[in-house]
Structures are given as structure tokens and as C-alpha cells.
Length: 122
Image (cartoon, rainbow, N blue to C red):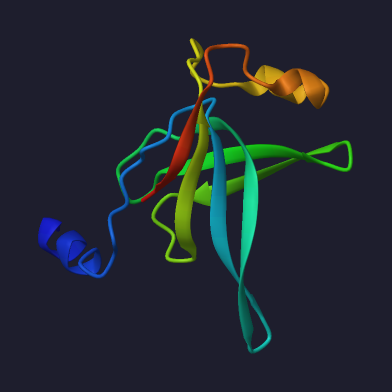
């Protein structure tokens, strides 16, 4: 069984999770519309990551668009993600940031020590 799993996962690029919960990230995601392909950037705060093995790990990014909260779940090992860029690092003492769903847009910035980074692309 392990041989089959290794054979199936050979073609995947294993991406390491360099970001943590509370970090502000920009996810560059490939969108295919008909025969056109473009890259769309989804930026926001990481509110959760799923526990699991390296191949089925997901993370949820939340942002505000026109005063409406929008969440998107990304698979970490998706071939459609071209890059994940860390904009800000935050020190958070919680495992999940679901309380941000009840807050308004301006109060969602993590109060902890934010450390702006240069473009940390992986």
C-alpha cells in the first residue's frame, strides 16, 4: 500500500507551510476561464489550518471585500497555487481565529506584534 501512495505522490511538489495562523498572506492562484488562464491574488489573514498529512493539508484565508467578509479554503499542495507570499507575521496565542468572523473590518488586525516582511516567496 505504501508503494502505491509513493508512486501516486511522486509528481507532486511538496510545499512546506512557512506561514502560521494570524499571518497576512497573498495567495497567487491560477484561474482557468474557457481557454484563457490568469493568476488571481487573494490576500487576507490565515484563520485556520487543517491537521493532516502533508498532501491533504488545507488553510483558510479571510478578507473583507466591500465590507463583506469572504473566506476561501485552499489546499496547500494544489498545483494551481503558484506562490504564497507572506506580507505580515503575527504572534497569536490561539489555534483558530474564528472570532474574527464576528468583528468588523478595521478591528480584525491582529493586535500582537506584527513584523512586516520583505517578499518572502516560497
